[in-house]
Amino acid sequence: MVSRIIPVDAFDLVIFGATGDLANRKIFPGLFRRFLAGQMPDEARLIGAARTEQSREEFQTQIRAAIKEFVAPAKQDATQIDAFIERLHYVSIDARGEAGWSELKSLIRPEVINAFYFSVAPALFGDLAERLKTHGIAGNDARIVVEKPFGRDLASARKLNAALAEHFEEHQIYRIDHYLGKETVQNLMAVRFANILFEPIWNSQYIDHVQITVAETVGVGGRGSYYDKSGAMRDMVQNHLMQLLCMIAMEPPYHFDPNAVRDEKLKVIRALQPVPPQDIVRGQYLGWHRDDQEKPMPGYLEDSEDPNSKTESYIAMKVHIANWRWKNTPFYLRTGKRLRARTSEIAITFKEPPHSIFDEAEGSWQPNQLVIRLQPNEGMNLKMMIKEPGPGGMRLKQVPLDMSFAQALGEEGTDMPDAYERLIMDVIRGNQTLFMRGDEVEAAWAWTDPIIQGWEERGDTPSPYDSGTTGPDDALMLMHRDGRRWRHIK
Ligand SMILES: NC(=O)C1=CN([C@@H]2O[C@H](COP(=O)(O)OP(=O)(O)OC[C@H]3O[C@@H](n4cnc5c(N)ncnc54)[C@H](OP(=O)(O)O)[C@@H]3O)[C@@H](O)[C@H]2O)C=CC1
Ligand SMILES: O=C1O[C@H](COP(=O)(O)O)[C@@H](O)[C@H](O)[C@H]1O
Image 1 (cartoon, rainbow, N blue to C red):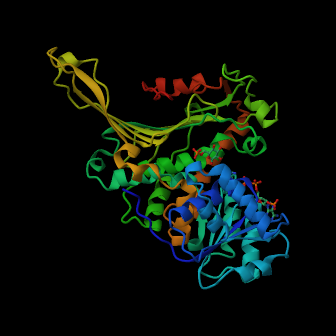
Image 2: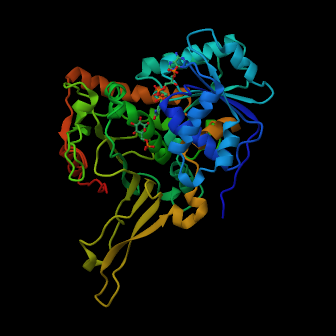
Image 3: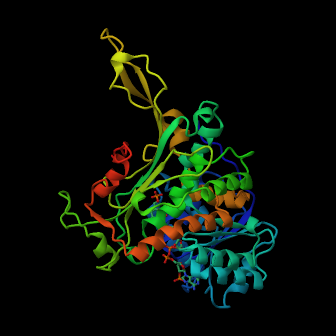
């Protein structure tokens, strides 16, 4: 079975920052894959824009190389690449200058969908928004797509929102959080709201706690200067982990509709309790000499190039949501770089049955757990108690009801669009459900800011941890002292 392709209408998509890393690694390769999938109409036009002076042909050569490097060899069909490349145009534009805009205007067809992807530093968002309007390029139906980071605190996020709002309505603004474009993250909503099984027990009466883990093996090398001003809290928790938490915690929206979904997420963010310092562990990775590598891998302080940096590359925290559904069910979040494995998952641990009828089974009982694997091997695992087979009496054993989406769905489950492809196509379709609304981003910063300010005021230093491990030992204590354990990162 092959996945159902929903065709989009004709469009002109301008990518500002077309010579940059994100455009080359994700955006253009993703657009090529959508082209291969037959989702791009013949009339689609893709226009790259950046300051670099180059011809259309030189830009086409750049994107050819990007496709070669970042698209799987099995998809490298020369005829298809030629056909895709034909759709590419290039305009040299400085976001802060006036040259190039009339050339861009001449390429934009007002009768088709117009979208403008700001794949540039956030400091340029306001300049681009303003010039798109003053040069009469973006009409009232045009869409703009903005990348993260959307601010570094509440004040800067408000400023960015205000700068965009001067020229565009909220329904035209698509704030990207690429986690929302991941297949399994959307599956969370299907699992919760398309099945009757879970909803009656989806609350603090039945759920003991929730663990959200996004573990990475990569360090911050190459992005040290950006990351050092950000840290795991701003880079991952304020956005990606927050969105995962919202998907688990939100009330059922009345409809799968952009504002209905985002209203419910916003309520969750607003209900997040302040987090006291004892409920947060920050870490920073140390250098590592792996047996299989000749050279030692640098520690965070070398990667960040600031030998005194107090920025965290790891964070674990216990979060409470102050509402009826979640009172007394903690959410434990953790994310870090240079950990043992690349694993992203959400684990929901249920409470024990109110009374056990199996006296002999005492001690062997383990809680039901629903584990939703976001990556790798996307799928779900429901851990259940059954009788241990054999004549040994009523002894209980925990077994997994494990489903890998790839296996369950066959070809349909393996050839999924990646997050960026899906989100760009949603922009063209005009569907904002998987994009963050301005008030949502501000609410997330309003919760994050006091936590970061507390570290800065106290001069907190992150705990060092060995690369290739599960993070600092203090993070184990965060759970142990509550009589709980983190799931193993493997
Ligand atoms: N790379 C990634 O994996 C991710 C990136 N992001 C975000 O995406 C955005 C782009 O990131 P990335 O591609 O890595 O950045 P790069 O530094 O690699 O690229 C920046 C792009 O902006 C262009 N640019 C810079 N100044 C101007 C200007 N004054 N006018 C017009 N264009 C300009 C540059 O081209 P030129 O010099 O030719 O003008 C280049 O094309 C950033 O906001 C980043 O935070 C978010 C998530 C992941
Ligand atoms: O936005 C970001 O996400 C990546 C992790 O994304 P994934 O899709 O590979 O899980 C992270 O490495 C990066 O620091 C952060 O900016």
